[in-house]
Amino acid sequence: MRLSWNGDRDSMQLLAIIDTICHKVIVTDEIERRYLHDCEALRKKYPQCPPLLNSSKLYLLWKETSKVDDKRLSHELPHLNGESEIKDEDREFARLAKLTDATLVTNDDPLIGHGHRLGFKTMSVSDALQMALRTR
Image: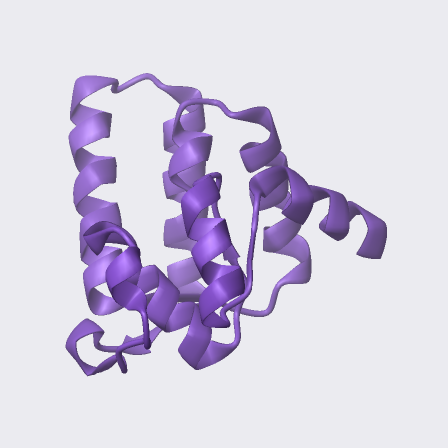
């Protein structure tokens, strides 16, 4: 979602497709806290940024309609073998993807590579968008 904040076209289009075809968006308590904190800080800095306002509004709508699965606690996620290769700020995303068998969508090439090696699904925003458009 963060890529959509700056108007990344693929990210914004992917969010719109996720809104229509995905049953759940999975987060943990800590991922959500960080996301909402970062979003609020950016909204204060850029109060009239349409991409930021639209993506944050979409997330809050998902929360209201129970599309966001936020039942998992960060400190309870099982560690991954070999996760020391992953940047600290990305480990929670990797653990959650592995635990839930969800696909982690990112433009972080090293994280995508770690996913392949450590057994959790990852793909770039552009690859996820292409796949979503094919299955739509």
